[in-house]
Image 1: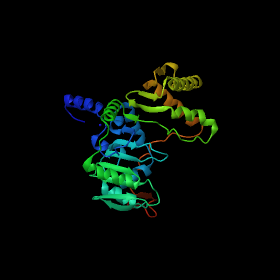
Image 2 (image 1 turned 45 degrees about the vertical axis):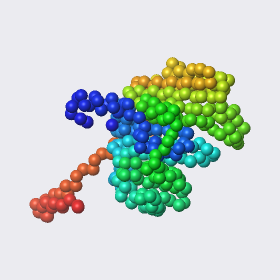
Image 3 (image 1 turned 60 degrees about the vertical axis):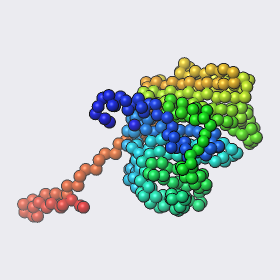
Image 4 (image 1 turned 120 degrees about the vertical axis):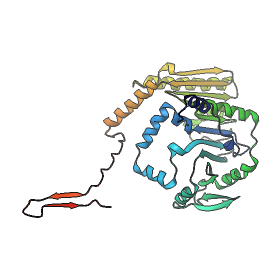
Length: 339
């Protein structure tokens, strides 16, 4: 998410801060979807941390820039929002990835075709699909929405663009609240793991039972000068909630006790509470902690011999070659620059 009028700028900033998940994307999800995750890329890149991420992207290898050029898509400029929705039914439940942005359908089609994708026409839309990879279908709707997933799910989403999806009103209210409050958010309106799921390794049986007890999960991450994270876990009963709270307290206490760098988590950075069958977690990481953690990571990389990525230096202009001889031989010869 630059306008010369100060008042209009302030208005736009506050509008961006209150931006909820795009209804056009929610309209395309399957009506039985119960698990959602969203990323407001535009809002993240407008935050102080996002501006640093943007600068790091610009320092990446030329290969990344080549992909941007080939597809006509620069994620710093063209990517706005991502929404992932799934049914959570069975081991491989239906899922779809929806992306709002600005897309050059012609360039994207040419780029993906070069990697083996085949065009499958459906209701006036070209779907690019690879028969050897079940979940690698992609379609661009009106150059501002991309739909990705298994071929049948992409086709279903395309079909729903005319009729829309009727999600439960309570679920829509929850998604709106989360997506307005957080830059990255998640919502599970049902069990995280099926009750009949098998845990193959006995060492993880207890952890599996804890995960099976989770009947609802929601929360998100907010980027500003620092990072704020919150999550709410709903279980069957108070006993299960107490078990999850105990595990989280043990885990966060272990992390705080075993991290000695200046930017590490402190005991007061994480707040854990339990009320009835619900467990709540809140985490705040300050800008100073993030800076110290980054500097500590850079120091570790230097000690291990791995150099942090450097900004590539611009290639000097080719001005040709001048050969200076003596007056008794060929004198001065100037070779023009190569084209």
